[in-house]
Amino acid sequence: MKMKKYIAISMPEAMKKVKSELGEDAVIVSSKVIYSKGFLGMLKKKQFEVVAGVNQQSRVDTRPDLEMHAINKEVELQQKKQFEEQFLISKQNDDIQKQLDELKQLMRAANKPKASTMPKIIQPIYTLLKEQELNDQLITDICDELFAIIQDKPTVTADELLMASQEALFRKLSKLPMGGLNFGRKFVNVLGPTGVGKTTTIAKIAARAVLEKKKKVAFITTDTYRIGAIEQLKTYANLLHAPVEVVYTPSDYKRAIEQFAGHDLILIDTAGRNYKEARFITDLEKLIDIKSNAQNYLVLSLTAKENDMATIIEQFEGFDIDQLIFTKLDETNTIGSMVNLMVKYNKGLAYYTDGQEVPENIEEGSVSKLVELIYQGAEK
Ligand SMILES: Nc1nc2c(ncn2[C@@H]2O[C@H](COP(=O)(O)OP(=O)(O)O)[C@@H](O)[C@H]2O)c(=O)[nH]1
Ligand SMILES: [Mg+2]
Image (cartoon, rainbow, N blue to C red; front, side, top):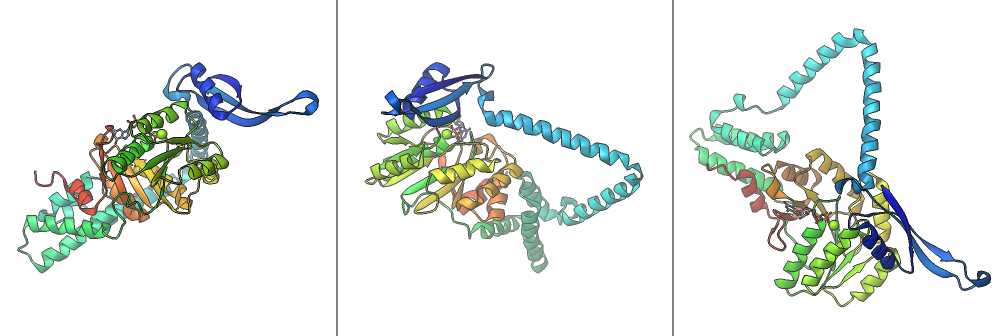
């Protein structure tokens, strides 16, 4: 990684220097305020020192969190190796282990619903839900309802059962808060990991608020980590003739909010860092106001693994996440994970997005949409 130190009279000035020398993919390694020595220690001048770097080999590998990831992976591998070595020492335990494994498998099989043990009429519904990767708990609950219906009315048709299963899923989701902004709160914090589509989604939400609802919208970004991120938001903001404030410190944030006192809606774009490190979350909490008068959205990409998404939701537990936004629906065929996570964490869906076009590719969340998405293809 090529690294360089920059000193300037303001943070935006420093960022400008970084950008012009190192380009859009530069990352800020550290930043601090320094005071240059004046004559006889007087007239000290406040300056900003920024250390920035850029990876010369590849665009994607520039992020330190990726490097951290590689290091973590290496540590993980070593730990795994050690564990395996220890495990192999006790060879006499092999038999016991085998028996335990078999038992585990038997128990798993007993708990899981299975297509072959189901009445034929339910099997297509079961298969469809399974293909969408709905979790076993939800599938069991839905199929249990269908069993009960068959027992009550043996003449029930496949279509009636399909409808009953859609209703069962509908009921599972009906208590969760669905739908996008109602403009009840002025501040909207958009949180989430790197690259999920926060900035793009903010642009879509803003465009709708401006064009359809005639709202006066302003943007704040705390994503000062990647130089290109600020430009990206500014490009969208310019199209909407909306102002953007870049926030580096809590006092910047305060000032920005005062400046936007006359606006209806303030959309806050946040830095997408490696949220596995709790420090970034605490930093963010110090910088922006999460609790009062703010709507907090957590953005997740449907291209991620369900387990990883669950970890992220848990990391953000302290943030009072009001609703989730799922992106990149267009890049996947299975959306069960979205429903699984909403039910598990009791979070509603504000929006889902299904493409890169701004402002087109966004939909407000609703229970009937979700049911429709899960069951699409059922009539084929
Ligand atoms: N296919 C697809 N790409 C998306 C969607 N939303 C965002 N993206 C793309 O994902 C990439 C990262 O988006 P960005 O908004 O910069 O993510 P951020 O780092 O979370 O702010 C960009 O290339 C976007 O065009 C979506 O719904 N579908
Ligand atoms: Mg962004």
